[in-house]
Image (tube, rainbow, N blue to C red; front, top):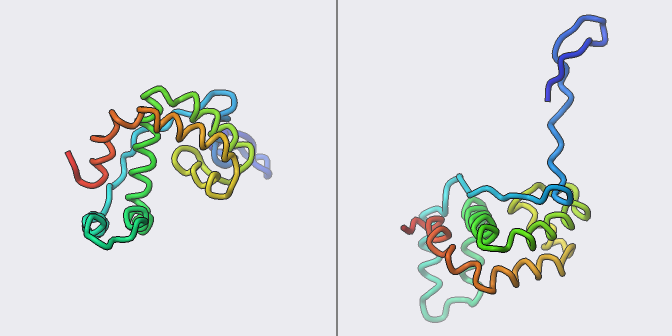
Amino acid sequence: MVADDATLDGSSGPIDTGPLPLPDPCVSGETVPPYEGPGCSGTTVACLASCSEPGASPTCTTECIERDPECRMCVNQTTIACGNQENCQSAWDTYACCSHQRCSGIGPGADRLACGVLGECAAELEAYFACLDSGALLPCQDEVQRCFGGP
């Protein structure tokens, strides 16, 4: 953020006061926008295809996605943004507030999932996942498939 104010030598001009603080999700909630970056790489899509082969590791899908940061962000943010539109916004706001308070160095949106990985806000994150699992994800399947180059 740049403010127009007097400089230390008495002249006036813009002063960089740093980035604007992020909104407090404990006060205003947190809307997660649809993902707009690249989806999964061709290598990741090929890796995922191998997960359906006999003998594939039960963690194959997760391993493929975790190796591709853009794919992981696409899947996570798309899931959150769509799930929140399907009646899970309140549960997300509760988790976002908790992660804002306990994991202050972690950014908004899908980045907040890292707070749960650190072992913080487990009950709030479980409540959010329960909301998603209760049917909120069904209408989101096509959107998530776009991360993999689907329709």
